[in-house]
Length: 124
Image (tube, rainbow, N blue to C red; front, side, top):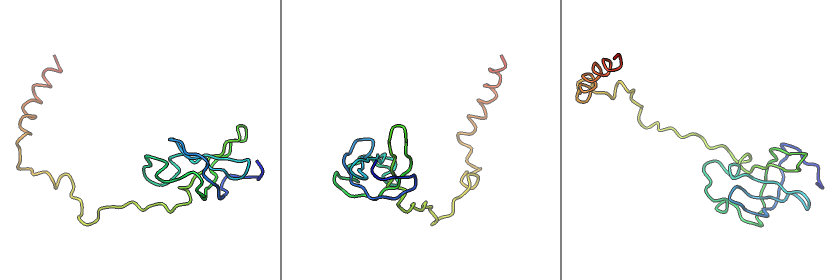
């Protein structure tokens, strides 16, 4: 490694290769890291090539450095704003009790009748 990188650093690199599991990013002439497919963006990524191309410059955050193997884990997603969780607030949700029509016994009678039979069978 030419530069001394540490976990948490944000650096600019160039995509040098794309694989089904992620993209390799060159940080300098002698240092390369991997952006795993799960660290490309928030949400589901089916194809890495839909988000990145070889030669593209990207800003990445260093997540982990394995000093023994020299492998560096990178993230693009860590530098993006986390999307807010959308909640359907147009209609208040009804509780299960409110959705069940207590006068609608069709279907429940069969269970009621079978329950006694099932209990009897389990005891034998």
